[in-house]
Image 1 (cartoon, rainbow, N blue to C red):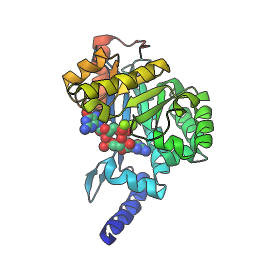
Image 2: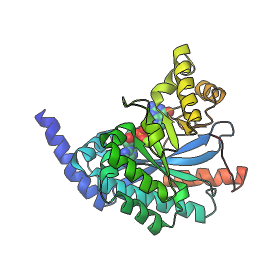
Image 3: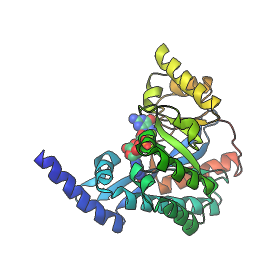
Image 4: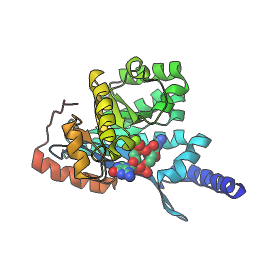
Length: 276
Ligand code: C2E
Ligand code: MG
Ligand code: MG
């Protein structure tokens, strides 16, 4: 226990420096139209290139960042860096007008008094339109302080961006927040996707969640799609947008730009995608 506590303290101290010294790197994972394979948007997933420890995955430092409130400056940094990169891709004409970026917003950051300012600043400094931004929040972030979360989300929505519920189905909250909060997208957790093509129960669960999303007029995105059978079944169930290793792994900005450039030659620059 003592060793673990020491390790967390070391990580917290090093993370503080990492944010100031550009050791964090934003990776992008395509969010894809299942039938055409076209990239509609991307999720940002942070990585840490630590001089002593090498590459660190979020699971190794996001929990420490959450526990120490460092997740707020980290989130601010990711917001600005990602918005700048996406705006650059749009200006270069390789990202479609409708291309969007989906950014994880921690529970801490959602409750921070400066969160609206941070999002506004990232949009203004980068020049990115709010319509190209989706903020991902988890169910647990929403239920921590229902009234405050609701009013913050409403203020953020007024900027013109969209709100997604991440890891949908893993929380244990009542579903009433779905109709009370200004939510646009639900991201079906990987646990719903794992059995979708192999067990009757898995398919039934996914079907029920998708019916709920569609009834409420929400866009459903499947997370963690790992094979063709899952993709096919999801399409069949009416889930047309997905993300997962089957389509693409998270990649650095340069690779993401190359992928968008390639796709813009195949599909053209403009696309309007309204299906949910
Ligand atoms: P998440 O937001 O639910 O992100 C999806 C995670 O699933 C990512 O893990 C991604 O690499 C992984 N994934 C995507 N497709 C597949 C698949 O087909 N199979 C499997 N097994 N995994 C897949 P990652 O990058 O390790 O991130 C883990 C979590 O860390 C994220 O979960 C998110 O909660 C958090 N995180 C990542 N970046 C940030 C950030 O910038 N800010 C905050 N606050 N949290 C972040
Ligand atoms: Mg996410
Ligand atoms: Mg998720």
